[in-house]
Image 1 (cartoon, rainbow, N blue to C red):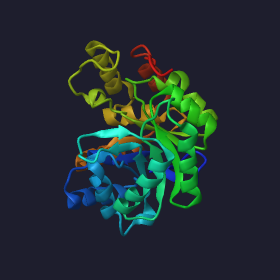
Image 2 (image 1 turned 180 degrees about the vertical axis):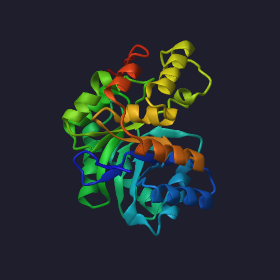
Image 3 (image 1 turned 90 degrees about the vertical axis):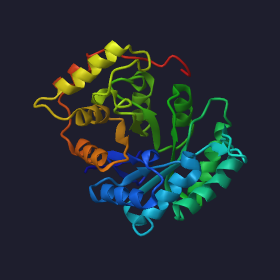
Image 4 (image 1 turned 120 degrees about the vertical axis):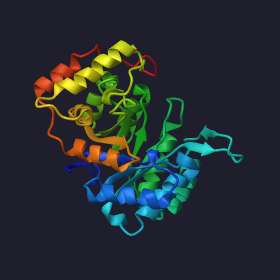
Amino acid sequence: MKLHQLGTSDLRVSAVSFGCMSLGNDHAANARLLHQALDAGINFFDTADLYQKGENEASVGKAFLGRRAEVVLATKVGNQWRPDGSGWDWNPTKSYILQAVEGSLRRLQTDYIDLYQLHGGTVEDPIDDTIEAFELLRQQGKIRAYGISSIRPNVIREYAQRSSIASVMMQYSLLDRRPEESCLDLLQEHHVSVLARGSYAQGLLLGKAAKTYLNYSAEEVARAAQAVQMAAEPPRPASETAVQFALAHPAVTSAVLGIRTEQQLREAVAAGQAPPLTDAELQMLRHALPVNRYEQHR
């Protein structure tokens, strides 16, 4: 599978990456699936301290203990669990990030994180304080690069202009083209990689029963799914077309796919290795339904 540079960092990540949130609680089963993914050409694995209260990180770390140098590990920070476990609170402060990274390093059983991401964000956050934390961690060698996970254009603009983020993880698919309006070109201009999640739109682009999605009606969703089925010539699986649509924008470096079964893994690998869509195929997809736009956080 092709590897692409992540922003201006020295990290090179696979065209399709493994979203680890979908993993279950069986560490042995997780390890088998993660190793199969790595052997098949996926080298980028994304988790977060929020997932399963840290157990997701622990499972990923356990799986790759003997193969750490072969993988690009990404995790996220900013959601602080309450002591009683009843939920979490948003905490993007420098002091919390410097504290939380130690827990992630311990659970991942590594002395460095390849990509450390802010797991959300608002324009009311102490953004300079947050950036200082990430820069300090990079200077200390505890992280190699940092980024944010956000769909808010106003937040993305601030980090693109004020920091040296390597990436922004955001939702992007045929059914969510909101990033095209103000985010994708901006990030490309600043040499920031987009990590596209939600390429399958909750499976709606793969044949799952149509329902309303964002501002689209069930009828429009069905029309988009039909376009994905019919766009490629010769025909190819919808999973390949959906992923290649996301990867077609030059700002997008990798499609992050949630994987929990061997079948899903095979589909993800095939999607990442599939030929790019032609201009005619892309035009057919883009004309399938009106482009949606962000209504908030502009």
